[in-house]
Every structure is written in C-alpha cells, then in structure tokens.
Image 1 (cartoon, helix red, strand yellow):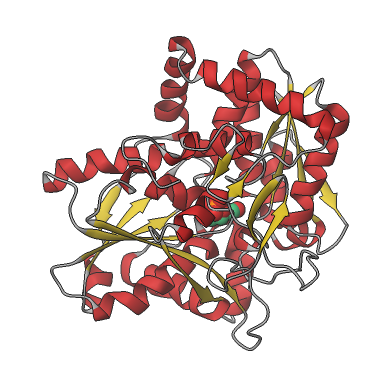
Image 2 (spheres, helix red, strand yellow; image 1 turned 45 degrees about the vertical axis):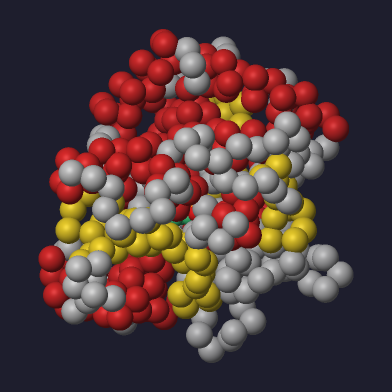
Length: 407
Ligand SMILES: Cc1ncc(COP(=O)(O)O)c(C=O)c1O
C-alpha cells in the first residue's frame, strides 16, 4: 500500500481496517458486531444532509470555528530564522481540539437514538470535550480516567463533573491513559447494547480511528482555505505538532499529505531528561510492533511483548502506543517523528507566553520546543506552522510548581 492522492488517509484502510501493516480490528468477539454497526452508521451519516447541516451548525455556533491562523511576529524575531505561524486550535470551545472528535461520536449516538455515551481521557481534555458535546446533545456521559491523571488534572475533573458527567477513576496498572482506554473498552463490552462509545484519539480498532480522524480533519481543511486567503496558494512550509494518540496532529496534517511542498514533524513526549529510558515516544524510539487497544501499531513494550509504563509531564501524551495512521506515515517516510523532553516543553511554554502572550497547555508546548530547535537553522524566507491545541487552563498547578511560582 502507498498513500493515494485525493483521498483522506482515514478512508484508505483496506477492508480489514489496515493502513499497511498497522491497524485492524483486534476486538473481543462480542464487540465485532457493535463496532461494525457503528461503522455502518458512520458511513451512512457522513453523507446525510441533515447530519452534515447539524454538524456545521455545531462547529460554527458551539465549537467556535473557524479557529485563527496567524503569524507569530515576536517569536519569529526572537528565534531569528524561519517565519513562525500557528493554527490556534486552543480557541475551540473547551480549550482544546478534543471537541472536534467528541461532537462526531455524540451526534452519531443522537441520530441512532442512543442516550448514553462513554469515553476515555488522559489529560481530561477528551473527557471535557465528550462531557460538553454530550450535554449539548442531551446525552448522559461517563468518562474513565486513570487515578494518577485524575489527581494531576483535577481542574478538568471538576469541569467534567460540573457538566453532569460521571468521572470514574481507574486504579489498575500505571493509572494513566492506557488503563482508561482499557476500562472504557471493558465497560463497552458489558454495555454495548445500551451505550455509545467515543474514543478520545485516533487510536483503537479501525472504526474509532476513522470517526475521530473525520472529526479532526476540519483543522487542516480550514487551514488550507486560510492559507489560500492569505498567500494565494498552499505555500512551502513545515508543520509541527505534538503527538499523543495522534488526533490533533493528524487533523492538522490530513489535507496537506498530498502537497509535496509541505513537510511535517510529529513531536512525541521524550519524558524526563535525567532518565533516557522513560518516555512516551514509540515512533521516535523505534519501538517494536505490537497490539494495543484493538490495533497493530508501534508500541512501547518489554522484549517479551508486555506493554510498558511511560512517563511524561504531559498527561495527554503519556501513552505507550500511537495511532496506526501515524505508524503508517512514519513507514512511508511522509512525516518525521521526533521528541521533546519534559524540560524542553516547559521552556516551550515559557517562550510562547513571554513573546506572544499565548499560554498553551503542556502538550503543544512539546511542538513549540521543537520549533525553537529548528527555526534558527532555517532561512528567513521559510515558514514553520505550529499547532497550538490546548490552553494553560488545566496545567496551571503543574506549571506553577515547575516554575517555582507559589499559588
Ligand atoms: C491539549 C492536548 N493536546 C494534545 C493531546 C494529545 O492527544 P492527540 O495526539 O490525540 O491530539 C491531548 C490529549 O489529551 C491534549 O489534551
């Protein structure tokens, strides 16, 4: 398989849900039919006029699209190399891109007559997006969140609870995103007759990858038009985005995969600098292929195939696996993957705040860290476009502690 032009990558999986060697549907037998039914509903609704009209209305009125695309004059001067631009996806309602994906699963659930929806969250942003979309569309929501994340992202727990969502702390394993996704799948296995599901990133069995990617594709589709308005064309540029499960970066890259003048860099979580074994960067570190949450992918594992714990300052990037579509883009050589350490991300947050008055969350701060490394080595006539997909809102306590600011 090689990348086809003119077809979004999420529509290029084969009939078994594979992008090259990656993906598939490694689900327990009782979930195969519910997953198939969800896929069939998605394929029908994505062409349904009423569904698309409702989606457009939600995107413009509720999410607040289009999000801005503009040049960072001060950061460009400070770094002294390439021009730096951003797509400011953190200006979506809810402070991150996650509502773009959640709105699709919730709207499909509503059209199918379902009244309850469950989902996973790491940093609490996917959970907040799900709780918001569910409330807006009159659905009951329940979100599974690792206990460690529940403690370190308490502000988002409060947000979800005040949206009427039941937040369930998960106490198994590393108590982070990996267990939250496992617990969501387990719950769905027992309740799929009555309950819809929303996976928070483009991970899991192929239907979940496709649904979430379809929702996030709006980022690059919108930015293509914004570029044409500003530059009169799609210019030569390097796109840089953080990669956890990979939904924001994929949505940001999707429309440009066909454009040879666009280079793309995915920035994974390098973890703490003083321990080079601890990270959440399976693509950068050439992790072996394994199966996690229903899909074949590069995944951090022991030599005998046991999924390993990861470490990152960013709860939203702290995941041992990564979307099968990113694995495929790596193998095809279309996207370059690298990582930034916890410490570099904190510096990335600081420089963006001080030069531009933009306070991002710690996840996109990894992309800013990479921009700080590459921009000075590039010419002033070159362009870098970063994706800022989260705000400081959830990370104020964490950054206060890192920056020695008393609260
Ligand atoms: C603000 C923010 N950015 C990025 C991510 C990473 O997820 P993904 O790679 O799916 O965009 C998360 C995940 O929770 C997040 O909250």
